[in-house]
Image (tube, rainbow, N blue to C red; front, side, top):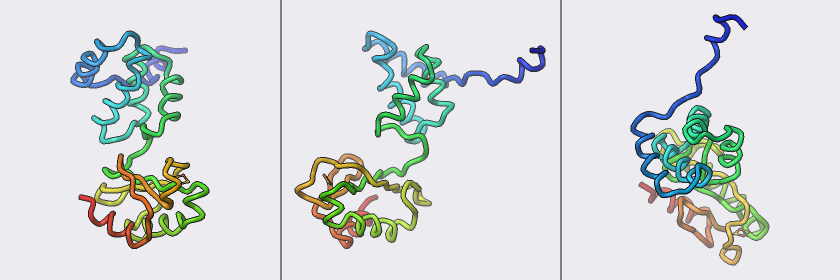
Length: 168
Ligand code: FES
């Protein structure tokens, strides 16, 4: 490989100095780099507007001296990490059996109508995004959805509309 070719290789992304300082403070509380990975990803995701672009994932891997494939594995395993932008209010609609039998399709349709974006997209004001989800453990109050950490149960399309309009 010529010197010119090697200069064209992309450098591993690095976290900004301020983020590295915050990460150092977190690190002191954990015994290993692997143990600090989850809170590190939370920190970087929060500072990056709620999602993790590839550059941020690779920067975390470099900072913790972990294999990027391992960090990608963690990011894709947990629903709490996002590889594309999400709304400030993240809506998850259960479409598993109980909820499906009790109208989750209508709940998804009501969200589409109210928010005017498709599943997985973010509203123009950055307020909301929604996705369907597997059982959220509230089958006896189907159909239901979760907005951030809060459950909304026994839903109707009208109730969905009201709840979404009340979000800041
Ligand atoms: S099936 Fe919807 S919460 Fe379980």
